[in-house]
Length: 526
Image 1 (tube, rainbow, N blue to C red):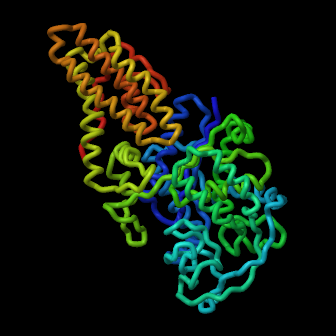
Image 2 (image 1 turned 180 degrees about the vertical axis):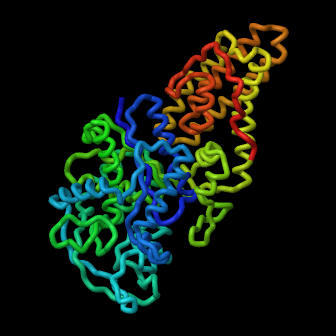
Image 3 (image 1 turned 90 degrees about the vertical axis):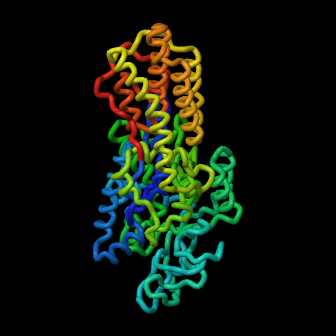
């Protein structure tokens, strides 16, 4: 039994989730459900990112407070994740006292390391608004790609930016040209960790291409030291004398949320925290490609500088983007499908299936309502739902609900028994689309097997043959439900209950029992 850590990216609590967030985060739940079914000890954690300037900006716009804004969206996120079946062991928030306490203690130790240094740097100031500006209040041109951007990180190329590196810097509120004063901050000396980070990258050649390419670029272009404190009034206090008016910079505390959440679970379950970050573990981090540097550069740098030998990330499950009807999703232009609306209108497994079968694993993928409808109707209703319904309905109608006693067809048995290790290996590698397609190939095989063996004819002509066909189909359906459970937990749980098997990841037999009268159709047409 291994300790499996699965960290889902922490969505920013300043606006609703859209389909791009769902596509990026769903693989985490597949991993968690799969490893639990295998019998491993799973720590599936995430939470709402409740600090940072965008939240304070929204609070000001809505005449509210950062606490009220972040709490509103945190509750909305919890509702969306619950309705989509995300099986987090802990979904928390960065404003939680336990997170703040963990981060404070982590930073106290961090400040004693040779990788932390105090530096005097430029501080942006707006002469019209008469205030110091945080990164998100600075607009200008990205020095790396030349595209219009906002401070902290370029949305176009992903470059992590310093305040004084932005070209033609202006105030986002009033458009005034900025002046620069000076301020003192604590810096994480990432440049001194270049060799460790390069070795870390080279030891993970199986990461997705975008993770390798982004990380290699950051290292090759020259790693820059990064400020871990800021002149803010919303966030976690800096635990250092002389820094009473400053806060820990958001990127230096939100990625520690994975650790703080695991620490909570360890305390609640009497588990050694260091054991979860030790040799007998595997750590997955699941997020979109804009978060790659924070998981392959920033988090490892913090862990290395901390100096307690905590395990670095093993697997980076970094998605590309989802477009909407051929156009880039834009929350500012309201060109998005909001997750809170989607979960109210459609079956959760219909939503999960679309974003897993069309997951942006290697390149951007597009969401269209036509494809959403067609894939539900052809695959979930026409293939999987049809196979389950026609088999169970036949047994209810002609065999008085009783599953017949018979042997499983060798052809069926071989196909299913070999599927468990094959599909499991693909899930562990983060190849979810292929794994799901392999399962649906077996579903299509099952429908063909049913058609070829014609139980509606053999019922009268060859009862033994009919029984073998039906039991083989029932056995196949039970094991397909187990294989599908990490992907489609709601519909799979129904089948698992009807046939009295478990989600345990192994081929399972089905007892000759009665099928309940009230078994239902799994999916309806969109």
